[in-house]
Image (cartoon, rainbow, N blue to C red; front, side, top):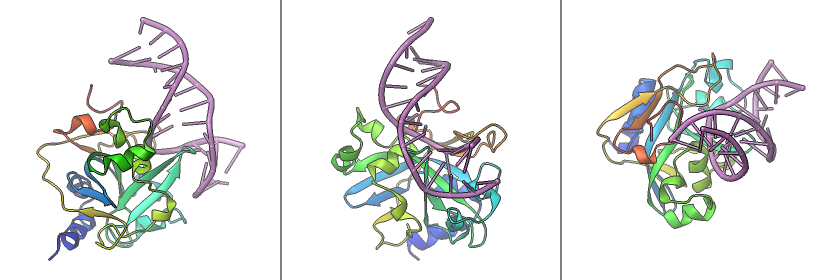
Amino acid sequence: MSWESEFRVILAGDLLAAARALLGVHLVCGSMRARIVETEAYGDDPGSHAHRGVTPRTKVMFDRPGLAYVYFTYGAHWMLNVTAQPEGNPGAILIRAAEPIAGLEEMRLRRLKAKSSVELLNGPGKLAQAFEIDGSFYGVDLLNRDSILRLEEGSKVGKVQNGNRIGLARGKGDGLPWRFFDADSLKFVSRSTDGPSR
DNA sequence: AGTGTGATTATCT
DNA sequence: GATAATCACACTT
């Protein structure tokens, strides 16, 4: 059984376990490769786009696990999520930050504001910009080796920390500790009000 | 090192 | 018409 098939089973299982399992996994596109170090889980809770049911934007959240859920927000930023939960149940894991491994030159082409390699991918909007991810990636199967953007087996994560999800309005899903990050890669994790002090 | 704010548009009410 | 799973920059301490 391939790693891809096994990972899709993990994504179909417990939502928070899926968010933890994505830590350490590699995100690959062309010559670019990065190791995921921060994720957030969204299911059917008040902070999730799926909370109000199926819409044209959220329909992929109800599709099978392992697909790309990409959306645009704040009039400026694209966000990359990996769908989770079995088909029919809503779920997505937001990829918030990653450690660049290869193709840093290509990432820098679009991340001109990054003053160091740390700033290439340490935030969901930055990561999408570096990988040139936009709406055209909506629904791409990230567990298909022929896809332009895909997930590949990565390295184990030693210690996983968690905290509250970031950027949600009060009473709209804040307070749920559904954010996970690699405690040994804090320097590549996005800045936050809730996260590690630096 | 911390706080505050403008940018800018797809999506839904 | 309001809101947003953010970022970058200005300004204060």
